[in-house]
Image (cartoon, rainbow, N blue to C red; front, top):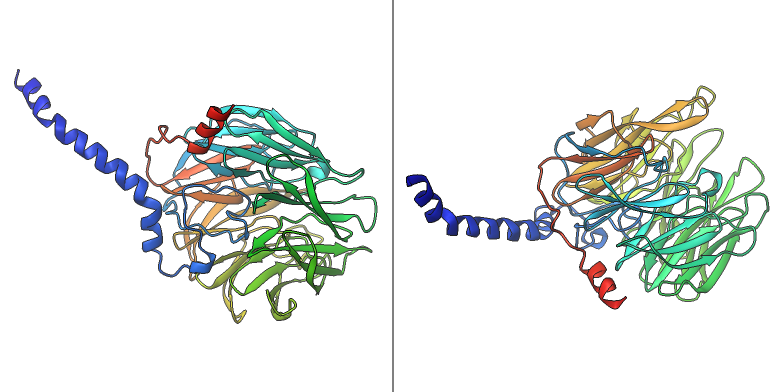
Length: 445
């Protein structure tokens, strides 16, 4: 009797505590902004709830204001779903979207269970493209086709075939201005590298821009402009370029030539854009180019060659690199941190990183993988969290490693061995989160 009366008297307090917990959860992204004064406001998107496209946002900054895991506790490990090595999972509301070479899969982001799978054409040249999410839709380029899928069930909303011979290789869709921007090329032909802008609602091609031999980069969007890179034959591709294009028309605004091909994607900051290059027989470079002054080179630094994309935060630039094969002793595995304005080296971390690992920055930490070689095949064998200001180790794990993604309530997601891994600091049961955009899509059907 006493126990029953006690429980009854405490019931209203339980409701109050529950409501307060929900309110605190909803305010976490805003609190993250307030507690992270070192972040560049120009480079900081306002919300850290999702990781909606490759390298977080349309500018490829790789920075989120979300709170990040403080420990290496594993929340879950998915089954072997064929997740593309070197790809990045995209996180939106209750789902994690993953490119699997011949399909896109949606996982429950809190449990790792597969919710749906949508077949797509088999990716070309072991492409490690990543999906993009926007307003209840998921976009992916695979082989010679761009797809728009329903985020709720994977049904095809539209698909667009590219011109004959062109295939998407590693380029991920960037969604901005009601458009989908993506690159494609023909591996066997010169001068076929082309970037496209498609209408987000129906997939019609709005414009295309030929830039050279290879266009395998994820476009960066900023203030009505698109920034992309290119690499040029003959082997070993000792010449590259960065282009600035009008996002509405595709018209060239400027171009800047680089030493060695630009194989990684450009990251766009406030006044500068940052582009890495790959040298097949020595050190590559990281360039900082002016956004406005015809792409003038502001600084350039030698780094191990990389296809990764820089991350921008705390007035710093973070980049990972390295191809640890016995025949390439100069391609050391490293993660670097440079001052964003001067290019001065702030710190570097040996034996952490990889030539395809684009670092994620959140909560004063840098999340990055460690690559290893199996014959000529590169795979990831570990995930690291480093202090963003001095490079010291926060934690590491022998799981995952491919271009991590970080979202609020201290979760990080990454890929390795065909699986997706989720790290956590605190377990919060959030299955009740509903994507309002998907709900509206269901009403419209």
